[in-house]
Image (cartoon, rainbow, N blue to C red; front, side, top):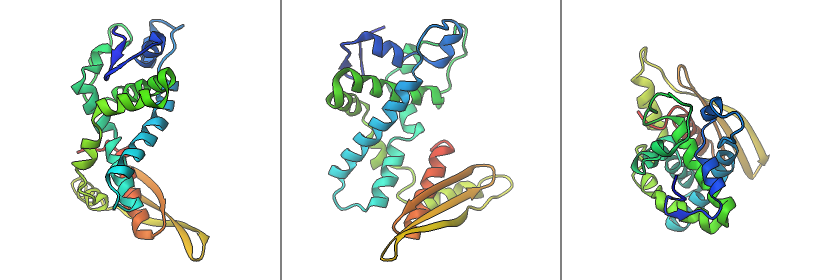
Amino acid sequence: MAGTIFGYEFRNRALLDEALTTPSYRMSCPEARDNQRLEFLGDAVLGLLSAERLYGKCPRDSEGSLTVKRTHMVSSAALCDVAARHGLASMLRRNKGADDLPKNAKTLADAVEAVIGAAYLDGGLDAARTVFDALDLPAHAAGGEWGGNPKGELQIRAQSMTPVRHPVYTLVKVAGKSHEPIFTVKVTVEGMGEGVASARSRKEAESLAAASLLESSGGQR
């Protein structure tokens, strides 16, 4: 297993090994450390780096627009695309005899995040940025399939279901000061699940909730 991945050379090879060790591998080697803790860390680091990048590249975007772009940038679909482009599936340590992973497997997205987490521990934020840059995730934000309209995309997907569904938006609460309210909205689509988000306007909260549901349901058609 190479010590270099996504353009970054690990000083601590054990961290990379851990990042590429899936939970299923422990069925063959119970003593092995799987990558779930690193995935947890990497998810947070990825969130920071993607927010940092979009904040700099999109100076005129509102908070809601930035959030939608970030959601698309770090979606499972985007991370799985990264895994496919870099041949990550062949590098993973998995249980012997395991079937080939489908291209949209959550295991692949988790591994990408785990590598980011491992790079952060190995070389700090600069190392994590090196990995982030190699992933080219900003391209996913720029070409977002939701077209900046997650509510419209959710409506289309709900109507394409059999039987036809319709998103239901519910105002959960309004918090904060009277002149600076924070709206929390929940959207539900039967058969898809629900998404919850908060923002400074109800319209923005609905958009973010729709983006959250799109992401949790797979991020792509």
